[in-house]
Amino acid sequence: MNIFETLESSSPTIPERYLEMDNKELSERVQQVKVQMGTRLFLPGHHYQKDEVIEFADVRGDSLKLAQISASQHEAEAIVFCGVHFMAETADILTRDDQKVYLPDMRAGCTMADMANFTQTEKAWERLMKDFDDTILPLTYVNSTAAIKAFVGKHGGATVTSSNAKQMIQWAFTQKERILFLPDQHLGRNTAYDLGISLDDMAVWDPIKEELVYEGDFDDVKVILWKGHCSVHENFTVANVWQVREQNPDMNIIVHPECRREVVALSDDAGSTNHIIKTIEQSPPGSSWAIGTEMNLVNRIIKEHPDQHIISLNPNMCPCLTMNRIDLPHLAWSLESIAQGEPTNLIEVDKEIAIDAEQALQRMLERI
Picture 1 (cartoon, helix red, strand yellow):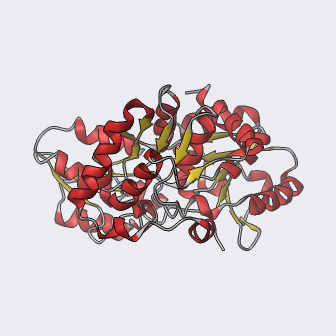
Picture 2 (cartoon, rainbow, N blue to C red):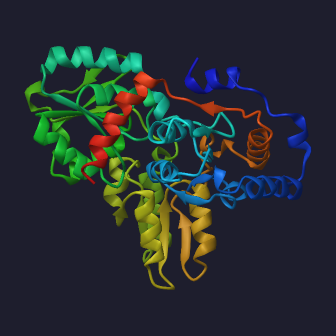
């Protein structure tokens, strides 16, 4: 049973009455609680959320930014995180003990984060220490569970974001000869390649087969990539790129670095969600873009920039199924439960895990 199945089986079920309400009533109920609680309530909303949810967010952004802003809301007693489980965990780690973090729907998760669990990582580390001795520093993408962040923090490593991955990998190589990059192989590969590290010097750790995939001399390995990926970004293909090039030869292609190496290589630009948003915002009217990232965000960018020609790099792409879990009924239920003093879906990271995970986060924050 993976983390999503575990959470779903142990979480309270939304009352049927919320599913029977229309959007108008649900919106009114959400707004009523927001007014009632005022600054005691804070709603961060991730960029990939549905429009019906994001419209009620007090701030929208990427996962780390939202967790940091949540921690700065000194009057907030309840933080209802409109995102996924690992994001809410990070918010719980960074906020005060008297602040409570809730997730409207516990099924809202990240398949990438679920591709690296603590047991797998411990086994991998034991094997890698035998092969490479004490020459490896672990780094983990913030899109990982608190347990993985804690593992990395305990072993002297740090977290990274898609915005600062280059900076953090450069730092890591001042500490050790090699890095282990969890859990997204594509972000690790693309970032290391941009820093001048040859693909021939990158190995892949397969946590299912419990083996290192590499054909050369182990002495040449500089980067060990965990075999994980984003189920959305991995679905952008070279064929998508060539189709855009054929049909719209003057169109710019911008993708997220969680995409495959070959897709990034053929695109005009690649960068974090924030980089994609700012690039479009700063582009002149009439410019044309094909964007390779999550569909809710692409559709929102299209609506907000009607003076530009914008499409999804993959026209058949669907929103992230797990990221897309939070809807208006769950948001209304979560807020009313809090207002009534019977909150549901509390996110609470074990204290020992939180201490080590915060170390990994702080090592990053000190360097950006």
